[in-house]
Amino acid sequence: MTEPITTYLTAHQTELLSFTTALINQDTNALDAASVDATLTLVEDFLTSHGLTAVREQSTTANPVLVADLNETAPSAPLILLGHLDTVFPVGTAKQRPGVIDGERLTGPGSNDMKPGAVMAIATLLALKEANYQAHPVRLILVTDEEILHKNAPTKETIARLSKGAVAGFNFESADPDNGIVTGRKGGAIVDLTVTGIAAHSGKEPEKGRSAVLELAHQIIKAEALTDQAAGKLVNCGLVSGGTSENIIPDHAHTGIAVRFTTKQQGDELLVALQEQAAHPTVAGATVEMKVTTKIDSMDTLPGTAALLEKLQASARLLHQPVPHGKQTGGASDAGVLTAHNIPTLCGLGIMGGGAHTAHEYGLVSSMFDRAALVATTIAHLD
Figure 1 (cartoon, rainbow, N blue to C red):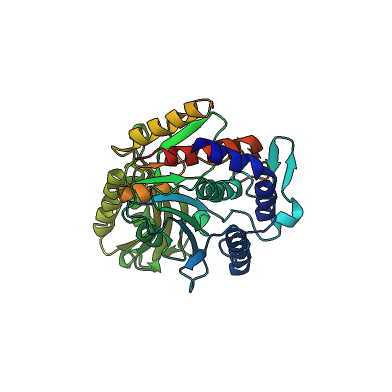
Figure 2: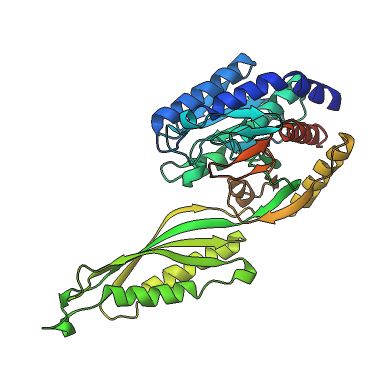
């Protein structure tokens, strides 16, 4: 089955690259419903023109999830192709610096993270279709709010529901040029701590006051003490505010906290610890409210991850490609949703390049087709 996969990808390179630049030239800001809708329409039309039906999940929200299936009625357990269509850039960026292919180099907003990866996931599905692959159902899931950590929609729950029962996942986040495959990623959460105290005149009757800022200082010191960088745990109180005047005992204060963790267990433990310290303020009469505004799961390395990587490495040898190595990385991705539900997953399968989230991002064109062939061939040889 390897030959029809590579033949399809080779024959459709020009079409797929044209579609990639069209996607790059369509802004996709997760907070702009019109640009999200236009992007989804572009992808839907492409899938439909190739004989696949695309369905929008969460269609009543501003950030739908796009789904397309191959072999939907096959009796075996499904496989998941995952990615996101949104970028970090504001509407208008694509017009300012549109997608350009200059030899091996692809540039433009989302040229690394991760418009090409979305196309690669689609190309993988189409290559399997062309090869008449029938062993497993294969489900393509493309989300539209990954860059804002799904703040405005239940996207994580939708991914989990759509992936239920899957035996393997492949996430097409962008890759470094080192030919690594991500087998584990950190997770993260944004936590708000809001302290309420009692205001009082700091000169006339300070004894009546309860300083929210003082309590926040205690909270910050205890929160940051949870950091253990050697173990992969980080608590960073990066945003602080409070009080209204130097002459008033402050009755309010706030910190926004970034929490990073290597495993789901670490993440759970850190959030429990923050909740525990919030429940026991140091300043008598002050109260602390903790709110997790968003959370993305760590991509844990599961017992089946190594076996999945070995099969992908075997496919690289079959395709006469350099054999990729497994690696851990810091940035979070939706692969963590899959591993949180015990689905062995490989990530960083997208275009190789660099400069993600900057005006200097780029992708290496040939890696799109090499890696799409690699994933499709791996799927074709799974039991």
